[in-house]
Length: 151
Image 1 (tube, rainbow, N blue to C red):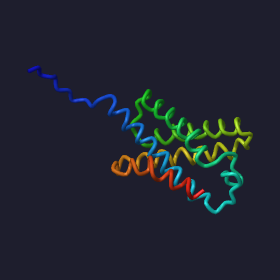
Image 2 (image 1 turned 30 degrees about the horizontal axis):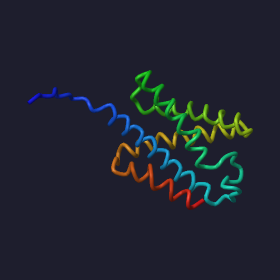
Image 3 (image 1 turned 180 degrees about the vertical axis):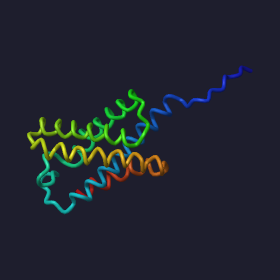
Image 4 (image 1 turned 90 degrees about the vertical axis):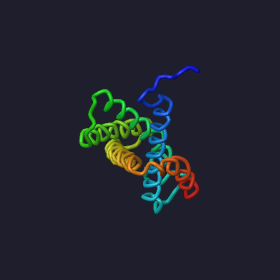
């Protein structure tokens, strides 16, 4: 019988899968919070009044890639503390807001401030997911579907 070496580091696939699940869960929680915040606004074609895009598009097409870039930058700079992470996420939110303004023709100041708020909410949703890991699949899969049914 062959013996396998014991490794004390987790599988790369498992780590990548848990990272992806945590990101999707944070996106789902952010999507839920933004949906509840704009639920009282009039909606035309799935886009709340005053918004250049729908809430789902704003979270999954702009906030999620910006959060991935912020995490990559934090990993490269090796900044584990909360305050530098919030600053990097705020800068990424500013960039995501400018990106949205450039693509959709929205006012850049409002878009960048909304991007900062969305990315900070995204980071706080990630921290909440780290505290309650059993809720990750719920916020990654089921909550976004319920929010889409609300809109």
